[in-house]
Length: 607
Ligand code: ADP
Ligand code: MG
Ligand code: ZN
Image 1 (tube, rainbow, N blue to C red):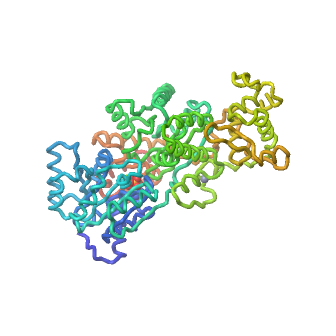
Image 2: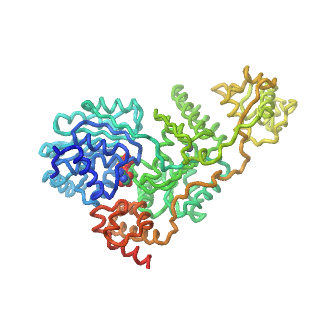
Image 3: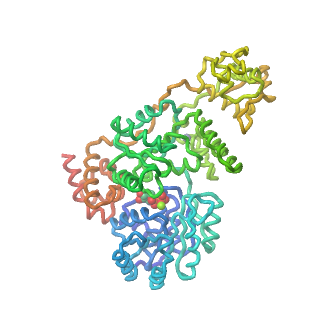
């Protein structure tokens, strides 16, 4: 057992040693070390870190050092099982107790915990409060209680679990246990709820940056979305990714299309039976199928680290969802891509749905969220600014080099007063009584029923704006509104003139805007950072071996080795066990179990 009264420097050495020998990693990620040290000092801690930031290590490492038990309360059975499988692969004594175990397994695991062999116990909150479990824990020395996904305690969080509220009741049962609450939800309200509800004692609050610097953000105008998706997937052959669609119907249609074009993809949405859903999810996790097309029902409870891309086929409902959904890419820290298709024409459709909401407050909130999302999509500055500042964090990097706007040479605004004046004249001639689409129709000389009924085909301005498409005009209208050159009434979207409009009309003020792109644009990117070469034959050989081992053990491939480990094997071409030990993710256990097998493949390839 490791002596905890040692000097701080010694503690740092010990945890670094465990990091390499047990987990195979060379260095800590931001805040991990700090968190581990405060937990070891038995100071209650709240850790806020984005998805993929590495929260698990912050209780896993202390659990190896404490001589008593660490209990991890987690809301999702699938995640608990996944983590226990991974920990066992690393030689860590971890067990799970929940309602899905058979009576035999349940009792075996209880026995292991009581015997003191188990270092880490994962339980669902409802299991924790069962009489026999509480009695079992009474007989143990509990050193740490970790509350994973601690936002579940808050009604303001996105998945409130009433059982989480009872956790504080067991505090008195474990006077020697330190409490560690971890979550990726950062809003102040949720944070405060966690602290008060858990009755954390003078908690240390550790808040990591929400910037995920291995994610590339890109927004593309959506026009022929299926073709655009196929173009995109062409660049990610054989790699794992998620495509989010708004509706179930769209999910089914797109999944079918992709398969027809030779991309293996499975659908996932709440309309499928739970059997089919589980089967499809499992196939994705096990790398049997690379692509999952899904509604937002997909993603909670999966921990797959090698998701290389997340596509949003439709506009997400708010920035937070967008951040969470794209956050499922690149948990392993490798370069990954987030693509959003944006069709300004969809805004009206979403508005229509929002208008159906019975409650006016709900409507307001939904409109605010929509506007923030549209601002994100239309932004010409770094995509990280709206994303990260949303969480109350400052972001001051000038060029992130990891988003479409930073990689492309910035377009300049140009004098677009000609278009602005035409548009303002058209609003004026139609007597400031219509929304954008009607005004554009008049400008473009449409013969729609509404235009003819109002005799707007007799306006002087009728047909004078035919040089731009409907979509291009819509883009301009948004710029007019953003720069307050016109006013837009909230409820029906009626456009009207204001003082600034008259300044533009009279030539006193120039309107400077970004020229809208011509239709049928493909991805604007020429120099997207290269992801990785999945065609590399050695990489493929190693992947095959990994898959074979995983299938024979009935675990997901990433439990054997992460993509990053395989990639480093290809780059470093280790020749012996010593060199193999230098590879990312290789600790004592992996070396012992798989070293020879993988070294042999590398050697054969080399010869
Ligand atoms: P979170 O719970 O914060 O979403 P996880 O704890 O699941 O994140 O960790 C995400 C991934 O990062 C895992 O694959 C994990 O093995 C890896 N990871 C965590 N810490 C480190 C580290 N210090 N070095 C390298 N990889 C790490
Ligand atoms: Mg986690
Ligand atoms: Zn940027």
